[in-house]
Amino acid sequence: MRRLFLLLLVPGSLAAQGYRLRLDVRSQVVAYRGVTVDSIPVGDTVSGVGGGPVTPDGIAVQCVSGEPYCSFFRPGPTQRSDPLSTTADFTTWGLGLSGLSVHVLARGGADLGNAAVSWPSTTPAIQLLEGYAEYAQPRYLVRLGRQTQAAPIGFTGFDGASATVRASRLGLDATGYLGWGLADASALPVTSAALNPLDDFQPVERQLVAGGSLGFRSAPLDLHWSYERQIDRRSQYFVSERTRGDAVLRPLPGWTLTASGMYDLAQSLWGNADLRLMWQPRAGFASASVGVSRYRPDFDLWTIWGVFSPTAYRSIDGSLDLTPGHGLSFHVTGQAYKYDPTGASAPLTDFETSGWRMSWDGAYVLSDRWTLDAGYRAEFGPGASSRGFTGGATFAATNRFTVSAHAGTLDRPLEFRLDDASVWMVGAAATWKASERWNLQADATRYAESRRRPDAAGFDWNQTRLSARLVLFFGSEGRPGLPAAVQAMPEAPR
Image 1 (cartoon, rainbow, N blue to C red):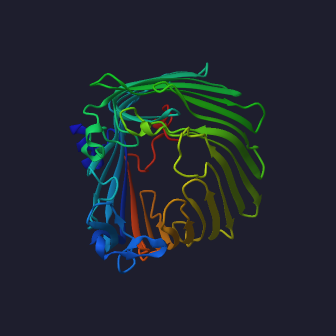
Image 2 (tube, one colour):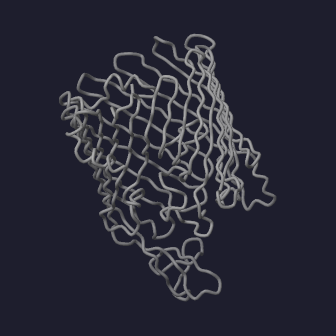
Image 3 (cartoon, rainbow, N blue to C red):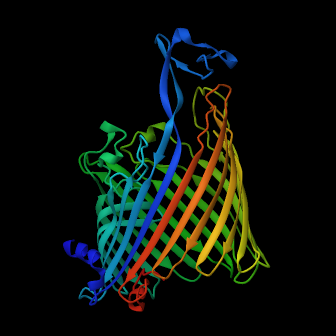
């Protein structure tokens, strides 16, 4: 690790070895209204619209029987977040053994603003997303260190070892992995203080992760099976245990049929399933897909979320892509879904159990310099609905410098709550690709929001966001890409 740190500090001295380093620096400034908790004696409240208690200036309050004070929220001082993050993606090879390389992906972040709560993902300040040594050969691949398995069964991070064996002539491959797990959707152990909202419910030791997969690939048919289990090392109980099967069938040129299904062995429940037919001719102006699916969220057994018995929903969806020519393209999607019965013996109220969503997007290339785009999205279903338009224009001043303007609207009516909101957004962005070694991006966007409430607490959450991004590339061969020998390795970028 010490040697790798030195390599990062002095990239110009790595003449004997190959390396690639990509630095991505992002900064954002966000200013928005905060809220402040306040209270008022019960005797000072008055009746508002509908008869409920409000403050003398018309803000609805929450009163608890027997308590002398009622609580409510007032508009607070402006909150400002200035999140700054840097991501370093480093790979080096030529370490004396053909096929051996080291890969490190790390991120550093900080919130320089005055907001009461730090911007997400800025704690802890430095996170190691990936860091492993890899030995790659045509027939097998071995990794040791912090890594992720982005398998169909889910995105799993762990510190440990993995191995993949391939029989290319037979179209077969097998993968196995074992290690100490990371928290879901995070590069942190589940024991980290940054992931501790449940206090006593948080595990005191990292879980043990073990899994594997088998695959078969051919021109007409692909098959894949995967399995994974996670065990709490202290109690020896299962954290999760799941298995999944996937199949891809290509019966005719341009036609593809896919099917998948997952089973939760730990809870003896069927999880997600999907059946989809896709049509995409080699040459043509249209492609389409239609599918049916079932979605049921699954949670680690150590959490409390499984107690709520999440209900699955079934859906049917479709999409259509059209490119009629002359620089014009369209993309249309739609989905209708319905939740399974909850089995509640005494529901508190009637509520929606089905819904639908749709969207369309279009783009028109006016010339080599100008491109226009527009879109619409709508969703009506349980709990909340939304609908809104987006649009924009892009002007390529040169091959390296591009400017754009964008705008949009969003209406969000709620089913069980107040604060129906409408938002207008307008902004501009610019991209400068100075060279193959670095490029710069900047964006400024203003959000104007209005809230519809029967009381006086419909204060806005207007905000302005300014962001900038700098991407730097370093490489030992005079260009940021990998050399041909490395690109020929299994799983190398192409």
